[in-house]
Image (cartoon, rainbow, N blue to C red; front, side):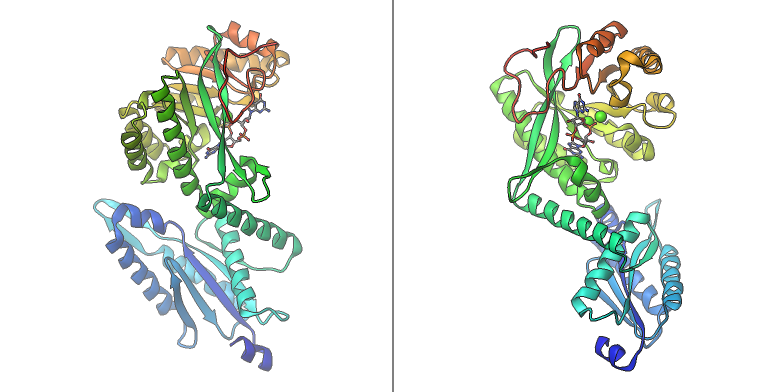
Length: 405
Ligand code: C2E
Ligand code: CA
Ligand code: CA
């Protein structure tokens, strides 16, 4: 078709379509219902396309539609129609309604001398761009250099993440969390890093966001849990008095496999669940408070604790504090870094300590970078401190008490 359109000057469009939360439905409702849904999507696509269009399933929840003869405007109208029609499909399982949506990438042809493979990969890139815009939308691929660079970098990072998962190239650093009153360390936060084939170490800022956009974040969460729980089990066996604090991604609350995985890992490794703390950011917890609460409650029943990370950056933080079954509140570093010189930050920290204590919760301050800040935190009654002043994230644990100069 590409040859024909180039030869006779026709203009066509290729649509790449990916369902937004198919994996969730499959995981929570079973494959039979998943299969049924795919059939409904296929039928919907056939119903709204013309006899001369080609509708195909590429695999999994990916479909493609080839419109041999269309303008860009016509293709955009068609993409809108696809979004709307798919969005009308609902699945009822017991008393829960699932609404379906899709992300679509569009690429028009012929384009200079792009090959079939290049067109398909551009459509795939455009699809990722539409996922990044939000669900149930489409994006027309444009050969604009900036977006092209961004997309290529996203694809590059996606490949790097996949390779790191496949070849076990994630490594973990541990940062001490100090009890301010006793000046002892019994907790460490686990922080992930990614090692490249050439040995370069990448920090989470480079890859977590892309992992979230491409859905790879669940695999990272699972890998982090597996490695950390195994490490906790080793520490427990050695009789080391160390608790690990594990970051869960913002998407953890809607991962149906997470709690069963943690249960299995705990059972297999014999790690003490009471030593594990999970960190979830306030923003993530509030964005999906129902699921977050449910996950927290289930993990707390196993004996694990919860820490509300980056506290204070969200909207109406204090309001939600009451609602969430967390044990520890981790005050966001932006309130701490400049604490010694910022009276507003001091007010906030003091108020938070009061409220948290009233609710029976502990407090941690992160980004504690000097003695002055630590002294203030002590005076305000904050329970724990974490930051470069106490210790940087390192691949090993402290061998003695932190050296505070
Ligand atoms: P976070 O959970 O708020 O972690 C604290 C970050 O602040 C870490 O950066 C840490 O190295 C850094 N930090 C610690 N002390 C200080 C200090 O005194 N001053 C300053 N300026 N920074 C300090 P890192 O390791 O690059 O992690 C960044 C973020 O990546 C984390 O923020 C967390 O949201 C995410 N992350 C890290 N590990 C994991 C993981 O295993 N899974 C998931 N899902 N996310 C992770
Ligand atoms: Ca954290
Ligand atoms: Ca934090």
